[in-house]
Length: 353
Image (cartoon, rainbow, N blue to C red; front, top):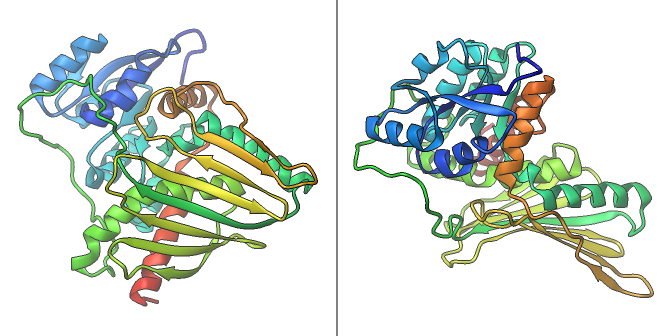
C-alpha cells in the first residue's frame, strides 16, 4: 500500500536509450516519487545510470528487483519480445506497472497479462499520445462539438502516420560498449496464424501504428469495426475503421524524410479539426491543434496548449494513479483492443477466419 505522506517508491527495469531519455529522466524530476532501484543487464551501464540519477540499489535481473520490498511500482522498458514476460512477472509480484506499448504481440498474450493484474494495482500501457496537452485539448473540443452539433455531424476522419525522424538526434543518454544481455524469456512476436515470412512485418506494424489506432479510439470514445484493408503494397497500408455513423481512413507507411508526418483530421458538415503530432522525443512541444469553422464568417483557430512533453505528463499521471489507486487513462484492459484490431486487419489481409 502507498503511504500518503511520502513519495511513491519506484523501480525501473531497463536502462537503454528510451528507458533513460523518455522514462528515467522524467521520473527523476517528479517530487512525488523516488527511484529506489534499477535493474539492467549491462554492469557498467547500470552503474553509470544509477550514479547519474542517484539510484541507491541496482540489480542485474528484473526478478531480483521484484523481490525488493520497498518497490511499490515499476516502470519496465525492455526490448519488445520481452515486454509481455517481464510485465507478467511484475504483475504476479503485486506491483503497479507501466510498460511501453504495445503491451504484447497477440490478444492471447494480452489477456494473460490482464488476468494477472492484482486488485488495487495500476497497470498502464505507455500510449503517451493520450497524455499530450494538445491531444487532450483537442479531445475536449471534439467532445463539445459532438455534443453541441455546432459544426454538424462528423462526416469522416483521416488518421495518418507516415513516420519520419522520431528521435531528432536526441542525445544525453549514457552509452557503453557492453553487449546487450537479457534475463527474461521472450514471447512470439506474432500470432501463430501469421506466416513465418510475414511475422516481422506484423510485429513492426503493431509496434509503430498501435499508437494511431489507440489515439483514434481515445478521441472518439469507442472501438471501431474494421470494414476494409488494403495491405498488399509494401510502401503503405490502408484500413477503413467504422465508428458507427462515420468512418476513419487509417493511412500508414514510412516517409524517408527528416520531417515527422503524423496527424488526425476530423471533418464535420461545417468545419474541420486537425491534430498534428510532434516527434516522440521532441521535448516540451505538444500536438498542434487547428479548428476550422465554415460558417457565414469563416475562421481558423489555433487553440494553445501549455508547453509540455507527453512523456513527462504520462509519468506524472502514472504516479498520481498509483497514489490514488485509480484506473489509468491507458490501462491494460483498454489497450487490449488495439491488438485485437490489428489482428482483425491482418486476418482480413491473409483471409484467415
